[in-house]
Length: 342
Image (cartoon, rainbow, N blue to C red):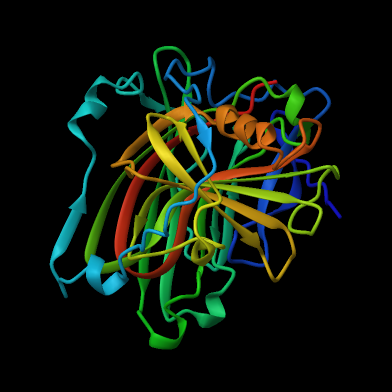
């Protein structure tokens, strides 16, 4: 099921695996292994984040479904530009001092429907995974720019996502693809072996007219080592910010549970991916994140284990973050740090 493609002796070798999206057949991410004699892979986060991430409470939700606004309600302007910029508090972030570092990986534009850059020596793949491009009129690009490093030796990938996709009536509810950063290092470990998953996701989005999509994290666990989109798997999605009224699988059934973490309350929706069979559980925050998120994603996955949605001995097979894209004209500049620590 997997294929090995070893790079030069100084770098890492990828093992391709299928990553999952709630609205897609499959996306490829990369798991890195060390080639004999190769240098040690660089961790994207050298130390766990100190952001408070404790779960305050977990309650069963029974309230009526809160309807998300439609794309027409959300974006009434026809051509005005909206700058969904970063909050001023970003300046105090521990990542504010990050500067460019030379890792010998050239900037790359990726506008092909399955373009991807495996980053030698880094734990990431930058992917333009437009799995429903046959239903898309327009283009999507996911470009790698550079790698940044903070004073404490934390690495971040700087990338952009540019969407120019027409809003076509009979396909505007179809997710066209996933512009994303996939993590490869320390995948296929049991959840009980994972100590933390520190992350940081900063973005600034400009919208010209309208845009439908969402900034998310997406992880897949399974009792089966290496399993991707299949009935044995559990897919967990963390929605940070939604544009244009996108809703997750199971939204019509109302929230199944409520969680307090990362400084806000989250409603969890669940349902089956009818194409591949895995159960998808999506978290929607009551207060969307405006341009910045940081935390330990193990807190989220531990909450899923505590509620019985995944077993502590299940394998963490897939992990990534990025943008689900439906349609619109938008440009996003982003930086991401994502690491799995065992």
